[in-house]
Length: 245
Image (tube, rainbow, N blue to C red; front, top):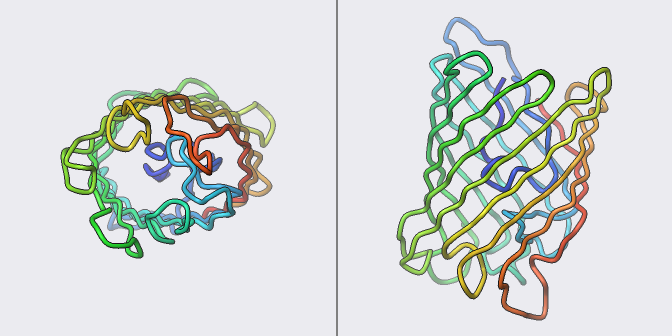
């Protein structure tokens, strides 16, 4: 089953989305599977930072995977162009390779390109490499990972490092699952005076059907954020209606 890497790199939860996308078609002789996901979220948070100005965001993506472990995918979200400055659309394109190292132990490595096609003058797009390891145990799972964006003009000619840990557990004999996330950022993308910040979230997801879920997450960020007219990192509750196909 394909699970969008974008969920992890955004900060554990795509603003509260904790479901995994199920394959749309069964794997055929080519070894290829295709899956998709769509969601409406009350607010889009990227590593604890509000990217939709406190407004509802529409999100969705498609993943194509091969039995060899190679995959490619794309994911997009609406933004608030007035308060964020990246325009009204984010589009991410990623590719990588994942494998099972042992029973319950997996590894994933790849790269992601963040594009903002409607941004104003200047360079906003950037690339990032990532790697993560996952560990499954009974109804639960744990993943730890790192993402690194090298020096590039859109990041103020500096780099950015992000490390994270995510945990999830399904409550036996129920449609309820719980999740938690902790991340640390060092670099341009922290939006802080000292370029360092923590982000975290705790959430719950309830599967209404095998392909439809509702979720709620409490999301926040801690750091030396510069004061302004709008607090992009104030703790908040995010609601999600998500579908997989």
